Length: 224
Image (cartoon, rainbow, N blue to C red):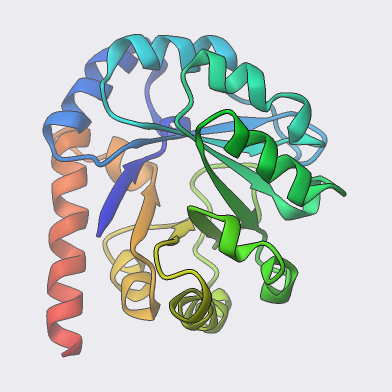
């Protein structure tokens, strides 16, 4: 199980300190949300934050492009330091072309789908992906409640990947905490993005990463 702290929930005044603490706590990579106010009703992190993160950590940076026509900006975020770019199926009419654009730059690529988007929309591209992201909140804001109704789709996604893209990671983003993280893991997720659960931990984000990992281990063990 991989745990990815979501930088959207960080204290930007203490960003370097918190990133280092999360890294020491066992974070596998960092998840950076980019929002344009169009695809989602919010504005968030951009290229300067990615560049600063790249200078501050050796861990991979996962860039979640919640923006219209993300193919316009993939090269810029790769240049800034992104290692894995996530494109939303709903945000571009040229998904296959956008995927190939990232691949040709030598970087990993994922596709994200919103809670109401059917899984079938990714069937034509799944073999080209390093990661499939299922949103468990409607994107745009941190700290939202986990949408449990996505879990059957997550289970179907796991079956799809096992059949057609066994090396593709299956990631969940939104409302992940010590209760919902184990539920998502049991349904088939092997990557969890966590914001508030990690950065609001009273002992710091490193302890938040460790607490979530232990909760998932206990949950999976109890399910056996």
